[in-house]
Length: 372
Image 1 (cartoon, rainbow, N blue to C red):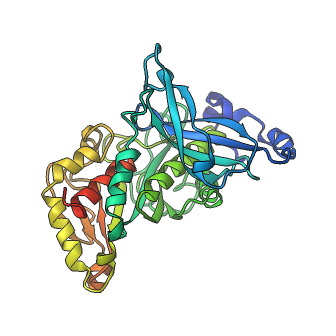
Image 2: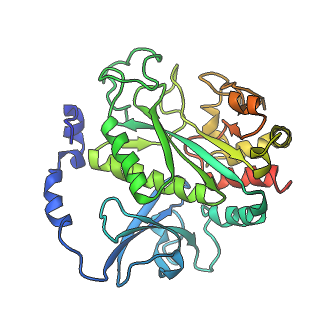
């Protein structure tokens, strides 16, 4: 592990641990037929992830093979203490890059004691919308921006009593005075690939200590599943380094870029010749449902995005809908290449970095495909 600034080492117990010791134990062979399955779920905040592990006597290949499990929902803001059992229904399986071997990560939906979805189980309704829209073959790609913080919750590597130089040299930057904690980014990238996430790229962002990675293209519900698991991997990797990864859409007030989750969307018709006609139809539908989408695009129904969508720092105003070719200040951007080819996809730049991808993609599908 690369050496970190002293203030991080002093304040982060995780960073102070000798990481080489655990390898002696992780290299121990697993008993035949045994598997550690880490169940992952979204808690009652709609933003944070929880996880716990159980031992299986078989190696699962499909989520249907896995047992339903439960947890204390009163400790995750999802139930009362007097009736706290909340249930985990496995929906997707990935390889575990931390334990490796036959061990698995298991993404789960959450259900209350009465078998109804918890309030933050947005996947349940999203899956129904995706099933209804399946004939359109919707593809999504999401650009997940995030910021790395030290244990004092200040951007990692920033001066304690001041600020770095103005934005300009940091985007896709190279060099120790421009880029911080690339180790975490590289480790996360490789962990996603190992797990089976369709991660398609990464880059340093405009604000120092801010990064982005892209997941997709994925069809239908897979984009939400894969993005949530990629977020789990991000938090888990950063934990190893004693650093905090935040998805706050405006972690630093002032003249600094916020963080979004730009969502690229297309249907089969958009990807075919003269698909630009279908793209323009979708944009028209989106223009007539702006408020509905703003409310779906962050977990606090637009309140988080109010800090970010100001019309400055490469954003549109939260109050107005706009669209344009190659315009990063618009609500919807048509990439230059798409306009020239007259087919492809559109980019919705409104979702916040802490959005629930199930809510975002469900809203897009219901507006653009299902006409609801």
